[in-house]
Image (cartoon, rainbow, N blue to C red):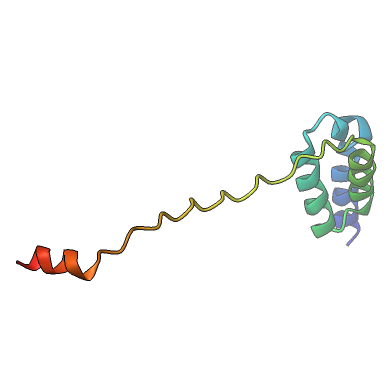
Length: 86
């Protein structure tokens, strides 16, 4: 059990706030998710701190494309149908 704690501390010691700050935002989010999954609370807290200090750009997912307008076709009259049949 003591060995696991030492290894865990070794991984956590590799991540500093400065090092995390060099990562892109998606990379920091991924590191945060991994840190939470591995119960590395110190790293997760650093990730939250770094993400909180970054400006929000307001970029959102692109809007869904709008459906093309439906073209109404003229209905053939009964007289035109008779002429086609003949």
